[in-house]
Image 1 (tube, protein in one colour):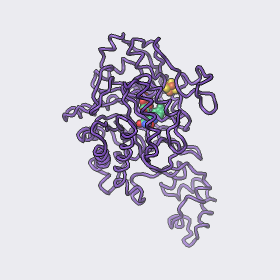
Image 2 (image 1 turned 135 degrees about the vertical axis):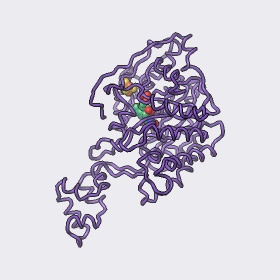
Image 3 (image 1 turned 180 degrees about the horizontal axis):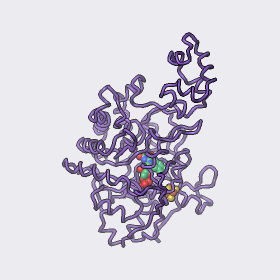
Image 4 (image 1 turned 90 degrees about the horizontal axis):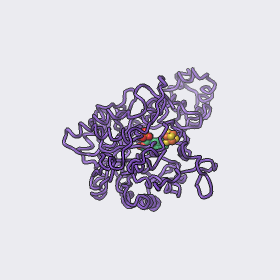
Length: 483
Ligand SMILES: Cc1cc2nc3c(=O)[nH]c(=O)nc-3n(C[C@H](O)[C@H](O)[C@H](O)COP(=O)(O)O)c2cc1C
Ligand code: SF4
């Protein structure tokens, strides 16, 4: 993972720990309405993919155990990991693209209800993504994937040559010469692996996205409703399809790109179709980027506009993230796909403890504050969720007090200690296991290995404890009880 060159080290601290009485009076442990449902407290576990689904995207016992463990800490809300809305092979990504996915997802909803005794609300993040391939071997790329064109023939001075001759000639070139002859898109396909973009209007499946996505999202949301969830979070963030529509880099010319009004058009159409499909008391919100953190990408000004548009359209909540783009991702090794959290924008999304002067804690607060302020100025009270480096009560409470957000998201701190809210709430804050923000978990995620936390995955491994396939890491945090 990329890290800021300043290499300044930061350490999470417990901060001020409230007594039980003080916690009871706090903002963090006060209820809030999210649409027509209510969170008992303003603690929120954002989506985290744990890589525990089957190879065809079905819920396993390990998926259920993962969410049950989070629910034991009784946060206000849990958002289930990014879940694919299409009924197509997507590797071990959890899926909701078919009615066949509903029974498994219903098991998660039931487990969370039971483990939290009904105290935790459960949402699921709905994702669509474009086609991406692994970085190919050079020889294979030239022989199989490259579409030979007259431009290659012209560059090589072989206007009449057949395809096989051109491929053989290209294969014999040195890297520099080959790069000179290939187009920018071909170079990217060779060096990083082929990747579709929302601007590829020559591809029918990309051209038709505005026609098909609203219904795909709506059908997925209807399945989430049937499975017993309290709502859905539309994934409009990071490197995926909907975020790419919002991006300033979206130059589509079909009314869904270019101007800011056009870029937000499809996300709004998706929301409207989803809203019209599910019950009024089923929450529908989104997660999107307060800043893309890439050159020529959308910044906080775009995000303020989008936030006001989403709130005005009637979304029940808005959750922010930042960065996490392909545009500045590191070159993957041959045989691996590019990963959107490996460049500077990836750092902004999941900053780790070696940082710059801004540090890894609260990098999205300023931008989210601006979004929330604009939404309030247009008369909307849509709850805003802010995430990023939150690890103690003092920080969470100050974000609520300063007007940055209405609900506080904490992903890695909740992975490190799924009971941290509960411990703080009952005056046992000193027992919180603090995240070290090393991104060991994120490294596992990148390799699509079962995500665990280094602070607990070697503890108390023994009979009855479920472990990773090599038997070396436990899959959920050891249990904790106040007694
Ligand atoms: C292992 C892992 C998986 C993640 N998966 C998702 C995901 O599916 N969807 C999403 O929007 N964010 C995902 N994130 C990002 C987190 O939700 C969160 O925004 C990020 O970790 C920063 O918050 P934190 O500092 O509280 O961890 C993931 C993060 C981690 C560490
Ligand atoms: S592995 Fe654990 S301690 Fe390290 S960043 Fe992830 S959650 Fe935090």
